[in-house]
Length: 79
Picture (cartoon, rainbow, N blue to C red):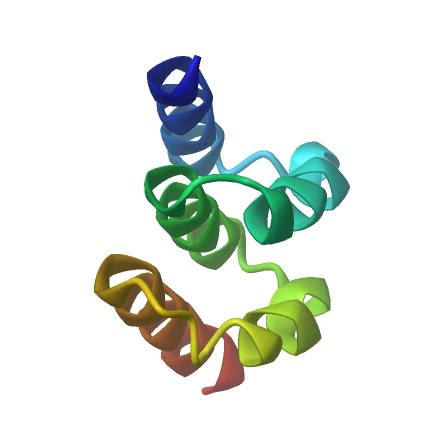
């Protein structure tokens, strides 16, 4: 279910659990826009430097919410 995956990504971000970083990176490129945006926010909260290249590839995503989440994550991770 889309919303179960969305809320799971939100919770991972809230827990700042780096052990699930690879899973988030896999999901962000394959899932629906709400889930991808939640994954971007979770990666930002986890401080995932490993995610920068994947996030850069998603910076031109057609969904505005995903683009915004990705841009914010990149700003936070690159400073």
